[in-house]
Length: 168
Ligand SMILES: CC(C)(COP(=O)(O)OP(=O)(O)OC[C@H]1O[C@@H](n2cnc3c(N)ncnc32)[C@H](O)[C@@H]1OP(=O)(O)O)[C@@H](O)C(=O)NCCC(=O)NCCS
Image (cartoon, rainbow, N blue to C red):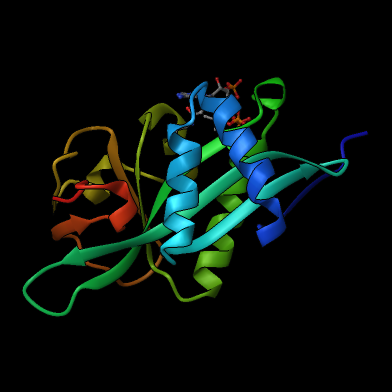
């Protein structure tokens, strides 16, 4: 019987998270990015999915600032999301996203932005329409947002520094 648990990541999970991210994407880039975001203190929420003591999924929401005429607004960016290949398509990715949204709302966050496939993220209430007004080098159908409170609809998206020069 499945014993999936979703919980907050802890410092002791770093190696297992790195391994899951690497296997899911077939390269180290996303795993290294996660470590860099966390090391810089820009992780807002990080969850793991645990199956019988093994970490089989991981999601990171990092600080994303929306820069407008006034004070920058604190939103979050969902990236990356990874599920161990042999555990994919069993609902783990969805469970991580949904639990992430619940915890973000509890923490007072109001807007999450993602760059990804609308066919997947649309299942979790992300839409391009909600993100269409933002200035970003990623502007396009893949740029989606899910708002769950008062948040801007315009402004420039500024990602955490570990995303490199990914800003605009
Ligand atoms: C994308 C990913 C996180 C989804 O996690 P998951 O646990 O497999 O997803 P779920 O079980 O919640 O949902 C599975 C459904 O989503 C669909 N799906 C998975 N990835 C998809 C994608 N990129 N685009 C569209 N649909 C996708 C599956 O076909 C499946 O559809 P079904 O329910 O009709 O069978 C996982 O497949 C993964 O780690 N992929 C490699 C890394 C990656 O691409 N991450 C996302 C970019 S940040």
